[in-house]
Amino acid sequence: MSSSLVVCEVDESLKEKLKKFRFRKETNNAAILMKIDMEKQLVILEEEYEDISMDDLRNELPERQPRYPYWRMKEEHLLVYCSCFSQDPI
Image (cartoon, rainbow, N blue to C red; front, side, top):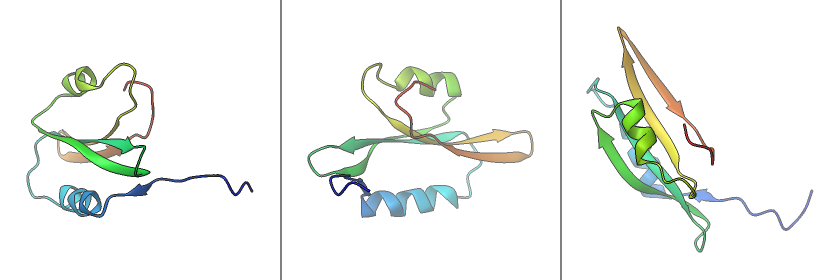
């Protein structure tokens, strides 16, 4: 293992927001968009969205800057939670 490997931490306020997001009572489509603060080596909140479709969320992602969505979709009677740490668009 290399000792130069640097792993980002998740901002404490973002951890709390993700927990509340996961257990919220609303059942609408919603998303949290995260990014990495390279100077602080920290995953931070960029923006929150309510009533957003997958296509609209995709359009919100910048083309050349990695963003990390965590979204919640309602499909009939099932709630689906997805997180995606990827540099590629959804």
